[in-house]
Every structure is written in structure tokens, then in C-alpha cells.
Image (tube, rainbow over all chains, first blue to last red; front, side, top):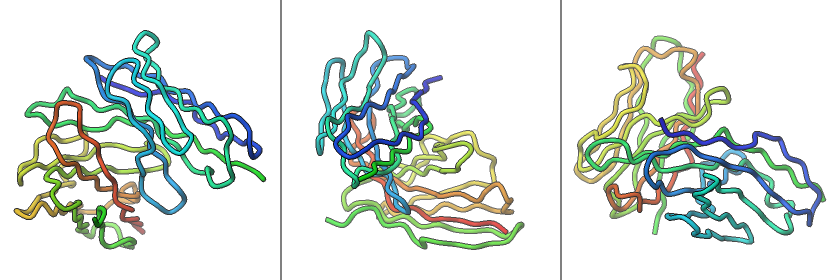
Length: 116
Length: 115
């Protein structure tokens, strides 16, 4: 079945440091790829997405590029802030279900802490 | 535009009881999905509803069930609660059906504690 593997962390950085969170996937077909962020006590917020190979998703200084050749979708940010502290989830849309349904398959999540 | 609304935010139940969680999707969204989040298993898909029909179901026992109403609001029910059912239950809604173009928008979740 389809699956997502991401570095589990935790990751601790100082403010203004460079961030990379690795994400690789296994899937049949060409799923859409997503990064979601979860702040303490909250649900998931969509951070960015990419729907086809070589697409780059970007939002709030975060970027990720859909790399079909390496089946990867690594999240990067050039200069993190304390407010970026959260748990980040990589996900793919699983298109294998019948009837047009699709579900999200998530990685385990990476907890990021940014210190001032 | 209001986001996905889940009620209640917190629930405490005892083993053997049953519980019903509610989800109101974003206006105009017809697909509603449910996920369970636990520290051990992470985020796992429960089921998806579209136009009042369950189209997809995850690998959960029959104690977990759901339904969707004509206004797209959805409920999920867990019967005969077990300690392992303690989790954050997340609801997500999306606008279109299938084809890999959907974006799922999540609610804040319902935190269920089973004692």
C-alpha cells in the first residue's frame, strides 16, 4: 500500500536557522503531496501542496518540491522563527479506493522547536 | 467563511459506554473524512462520506461507525468504548470528489478520553 516516511525528530533549532524535514513516499500512480502543520491543542492546517512532478509548493516561507525520481517532498525554510514551533506532517492522497474516494496517508510527524 | 467545526472539543467517557462526535463541514463541501490521531499510531483514516454514502473505510473494528446527513454534516459513533479509543478525532472536509485534486481542511478535533 501507499506510505509516507518522514524524519521523526524532534528537531530543535535556533531562530533564523535553516530547516529541512525529509519526506519520502511510496505510491502507485501520481498522488498529490501535502505538508500539514499542527500547533499545540489544534487540528491540522494545510501548509502547502503539490499535485504533479516538479511542482513546488510554497507558503509562509516554507517550500517543498515534488520529486518523482527520488519519491521525495522535503520541507525547507530558510530562516525559522519561534512561531514555527509545531508538529509537521507529510501526507499523500491515496487514490486507490473505489468510487472516487481518496484518503490522506500521513507520515508520523516531526516536532519542531525553535528557540529564541 | 466558517471552517470545519467539531463538537464537542473534549469528552470523557468510561469503558463500555458509547460516544457520538459531530462535524460540520465548510459550507459547500460535500465530502467529509474522519481520522484518529494517537501518539502510537499517528494519524489513521477512519472513513469518508460523500452525498450521505460511505465511500471508503479504514481498518477499524465495526464499533466505529458514521453517517452523513443531507446538509453534509457528519457524525461518528464509537460503541463499547475501550481504553485504546482515547485519541484526538479529526474531521476534514473537501469540495470536490476524487481525481487527486482535493484539499482536505481539518477541524480542531475532539479529544476523547476513555477511563
